Image 1 (cartoon, rainbow, N blue to C red):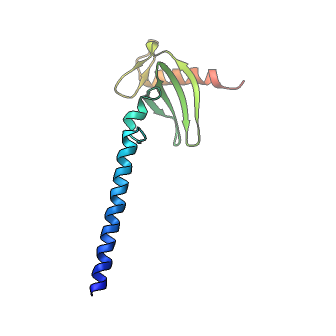
Image 2 (image 1 turned 30 degrees about the vertical axis):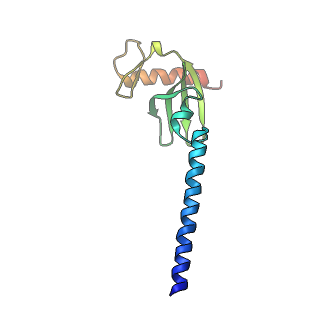
Image 3 (image 1 turned 180 degrees about the vertical axis):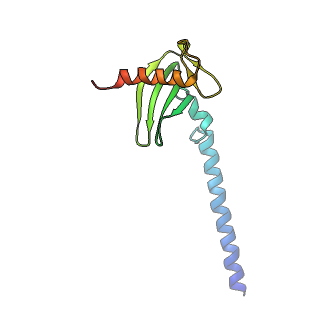
Length: 127
C-alpha cells in the first residue's frame, strides 16, 4: 500500500512539472510573437472579404471577393478556384440580400446575374 501511494505522488509531481514547463514555454513564445492568434496574422497581409457568392450548381459557384483594394470575380469548384476577372465595384450594387445587380435598366437580380454570367463567359470562353 505504501509503495502505491509513493508512485501516485511521483506521478502527480511529474505531471505538475510537465504542465508547468509547458505553461512557461507558452508564455515565453507568446511574448516573443510566435502565437497562432488570428488577430496578429491578419495585419501581416491584405484583408480578404467575401462580398457575395452565387451557386451555379451542386459543386460550383461564383464569388466576388475584395482583396485589399482589388475586387475579383472568382469561379469556385470543389477542386479549384479560378480568377475570372478584376472588377470595379463602383459599377456594381452589392446589397445585403446576397445578390449582385448590374445597373443596366433591368429590374430583377436574376436577369442581372444572367447578364454578368454572359459577360464572364464571353471573356473566359475559349473560341
